[in-house]
Image 1 (tube, rainbow, N blue to C red):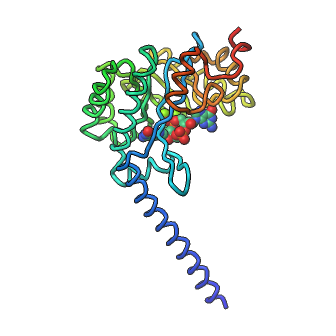
Image 2 (image 1 turned 180 degrees about the vertical axis):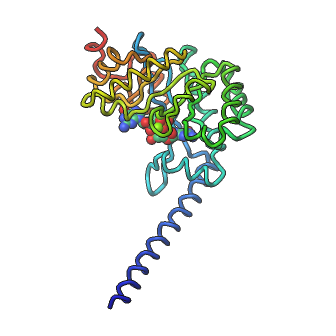
Image 3 (image 1 turned 120 degrees about the vertical axis):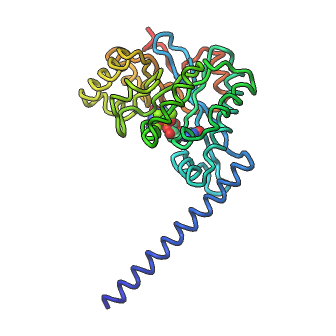
Length: 286
Ligand code: C2E
Ligand code: MG
Ligand code: MG
Ligand code: MG
């Protein structure tokens, strides 16, 4: 009996693994096709300056709409593309689209593009970025790159050298998701950065946990002292926004309250209407 049960469990396990494996292989094949067909598209999330309360920049976020599964989140397909050795194709696609769309928004709005660990080790990345800028004549100051600590850690010296080249060419360099993961404070001091994006986990707890606010304020202060601008990610409520403005002293905010990721056309409309992306702007503006 016991052996039979075991055999059955094994059979179920094997079947599940097989399905998972086949799905994964299938998903990879589908992703490859989507990349070849340029079926990856880009949406943009507004980033608002807390002083002017205007959109100053947008983060480019890759989207894949699978023909049968529907939207596959980037947290799923970006690692797949990395495994397949195809992430640089996605990066190039996003860079080109982002530069083109940013150019169409007028010259006061910037765009930021996420780079993965593999991009940081790609010897072609400088040329890819330059080609994207040149394709529409976008000045480097309009482009920002976002890198995570996790991506840097794989080859810190190489990443650091690349970031220095980017920064020297006038591109803004941001440390993304700061505070989750390794959060080495020495990174803030030793990497060639312009900006820190504080991870949204701090904001999530800011209303209920005083220490989250203290951390938020502390990291902001420290970043400012080091000459870095600060973006707070993941702002979802008016209360969080008010706290961040008054108590944390950040420069920029991003989050569903200010605007969900949306199309380039919608961003252009928001900019034209001088909208912050929020339905009700007045209470906090006053
Ligand atoms: P990220 O770079 O930290 O991007 C911000 C993510 O937080 C986005 O998720 C955005 O939709 C989400 N977000 C923004 N505001 C809020 C909020 O108020 N609440 C909550 N709960 N979430 C918010 P998304 O688009 O699913 O992207 C997830 C991650 O996938 C990104 O995190 C980035 O690491 C990666 N990613 C997305 N597009 C690309 C890309 O083109 N290239 C690379 N290498 N990675 C990408
Ligand atoms: Mg990012
Ligand atoms: Mg982030
Ligand atoms: Mg993130």
